[in-house]
Length: 425
Ligand code: HSE
Image (cartoon, rainbow, N blue to C red; front, top):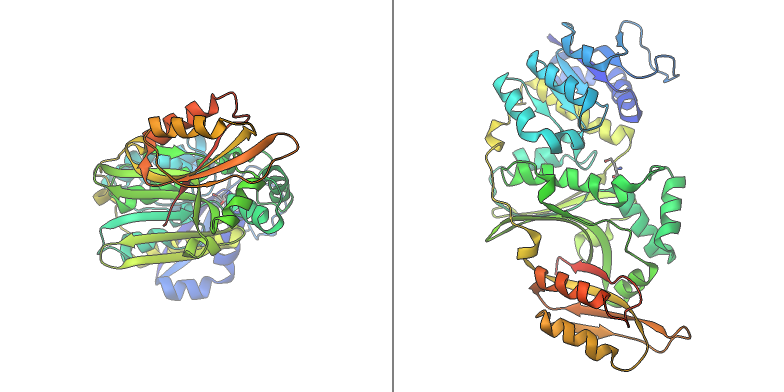
């Protein structure tokens, strides 16, 4: 059997799991991959940290980029993270030195998609990234291979485990967003600075990759309308229950007559649809293809071993010679702006409980050509402010955005309006 020598850059949670699983299961992997798989080089920031790994017989690099020039490395495994800097330099130089690359780095791919894929193609090596989207779920393989016969109509994903955990806790316990976020931080899901997750950036990077693959385009993060979780309150969860919905942060790519439209957005979805029951830190992806119809994939979206499972799947494809250049994906598909599309929406206003408010609200909606489906307003509160909840029929996104600005400017509307999409209906 021929050797396949790995250089692993980054020994954080995922890097350590890759090292441990490859070491422990090497016999099985060799049989399955038809190669003699070895870890020949590693790099991390702190050599002396106790990682419980046997690093004898493995070259150590304190500068990760040097792995790209090591003649004893056939596959560079990039697990450093970040859009530029060492991760970018390592991947680029590895490809230029004719090494295959496996990466879990969605931010890097989202920013440098065409450049890196074209470079890999030109150098006849593979750039593999199963671990970059939805952790252990083999969703890249599903789109590239299992569903290769399909034109895709839509992708809906729960791609951020931290957000799904927060929303699940809010749902189960009736707690507000801040309390659920603190719980997620305590449980180790959310970072000390959680903005990348809760503001939808992480999910946006992942969606840009899925869209680029499924709709054969550039990965364009800037084409995504990105909204995070911060506006969701315990009240919205209560109203979702009343309306028979669940709230989920969805990554959506839909093919419309104008092109592919993409959103990261907290959405109301029917409580009995497949994505509604995805709880905790799990991820899930729903794909609608013209031949296969609807398929759903569920699993761990993060965590050392689950992500390592995806990293090693890519290594196995390279071992078997199944990996191939991705040049076929670098055409440019047409993208459409969210504002040009139609959708259904949920609006929650906090209004003064005085006469005439409803007339003002409905006049704005009439002027913006927004047609209402339902209105909920209960009782009178002692504070003289009450929530007013409206749901719309299908309406132009530009109209609803205009209406929200006008509603927010009314004297009788006391807080920033909350606007959520209603999807999968
Ligand atoms: N922080 C991400 C999540 C995992 O919560 O899903 C890595 O992208």
